[in-house]
Amino acid sequence: MAIFKEFDSVDHDRSVEDRRRHRQLVEKSIRDNLGDILSEESIIGEGKDKKIKIPIRGLKEYQFIYGKNTPGVGSGDGSEKRGDKIGSDKSQQGKGKGSGQAGSEEGEDIYETEISIDDVLSYLMQDLELPDLDKKKFSEILSENATKKCGYQKHGINPRLAKKRTVIEKIKREQGKKRALREAEQEVKIDRFPFKEDDLRYYRVKKTKKREFNAAIICIMDTSGSMDNTKKYLARSFFFVLSRFIRMKYTNVEVAFISHSTTAKEVNENEFFHKVESGGTYISSGYVKALEIIEERYNPSFWNIYVFNVSDGDNWAEDNDRAVKACHELTEVSNMVGYAEILPSFYSSGLKDKLTKEVKSNKFTVVTVKQKQDLWNALKGILKKEVKEG
Image (cartoon, rainbow, N blue to C red; front, side):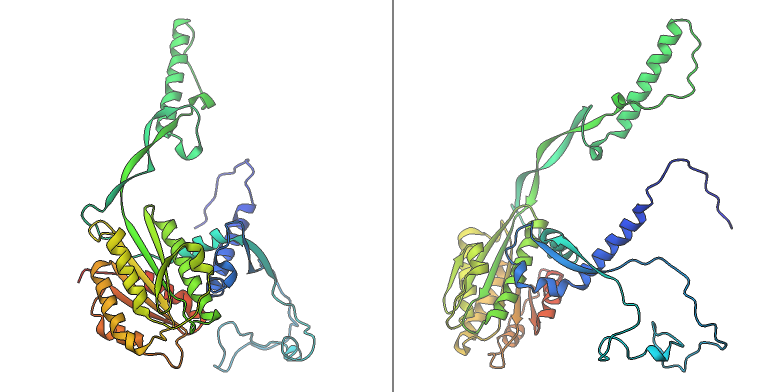
């Protein structure tokens, strides 16, 4: 059935569809390159003005391509795959990339676009979700980040346009004009009565207070000698995206940073992401430090607590039992405890297996990163883990 549209003499912006398609290509390209972007050392600690280049396939319009008009039917032998060309010119095969000579066929248009760090992270955050905060007793605070509507005003921004009130103002003006015509004993007939700028009304808003839940995030990173530069870059990338995600997602969040070798200490954010250390490994020291911070500042009755630890698993065997015990204590006072083992070495002490077997809590989750491409999936695996009270 044919559908006829009424003619509209108003010119439309024909570039809207092109911009929409370009935006979709940008989003797809970012998602396809998330693993590489996330594992780049340069992303750590960069400001919002830092730009990242993303390759994007070009847009092409549909067109007719004329062949050689040779007789016959293009059919395959059953071994073809989707995207293969049937009956392609044999003389062109092998001419191009990897053939040792210059190609003669048209290539694909690839462009580069620049996007800010904040934009990249906003795409990353769309796929992440911190387990729901438990509604703990006394865990709510008053926040001034909320707004409340309180009357109308003549000036404002479009998102605050009060449409119903605007229509009322127009009707009032129209009724006033009709009344004036009747008083002047003139014919009351108005064919068209458009809106005027004076009719527009916008909501007036004021800051108000609302209740929000407290969240405390404790990041524990192994900075011992076995954590080489590659492992440390991956660990820092993991925590960098994690901390940015949490701050973008929740208003009232406090983040504590712990670095450890054989001993652990709390550091500021800059030291956590840039300071390099060495020495042996006692993973239990990081867990014990986290327990101390929780006891001093984050009462589990008031705070929703999340603990994340990244290490290569190369721990002293004598420390494994202490690490398991401390990890179990953390699960008792936290909403979630996550352990990410990055590029485990051949001489790993098997801490991951020991934690998995002996920490009997559904609040505890473990992921492994065997190569940098696994980092993104590991991050999603931890943040999409549903935590239930056990």
